[in-house]
Length: 109
Image (cartoon, rainbow, N blue to C red):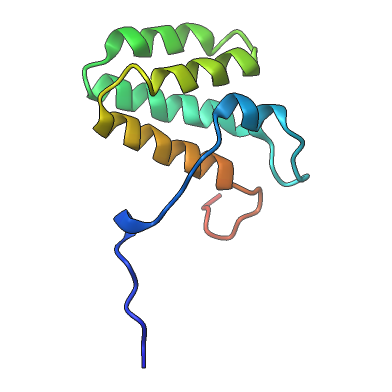
């Protein structure tokens, strides 16, 4: 008997706050400061697409600071400033960032 898979929307992910995640020790195949710029780009696009250009502009100003803690903290704060649907989407990006491992065969190079 084959078990039926649950729809993707029912998958559960409880990402940690990004500020905590970047501050903790990680396995050698994880590099939060390396993946955070990708997450920033995702956030930037979603914010713009959802009419949140002022918040996207604030995020854009932080991209060149090199301050990973400040960027992660801002990205955490953003989720409290947007509507629930966009917040859910941003949390999905947090899950993707936190589950990424270098060399993951599911990630195209």
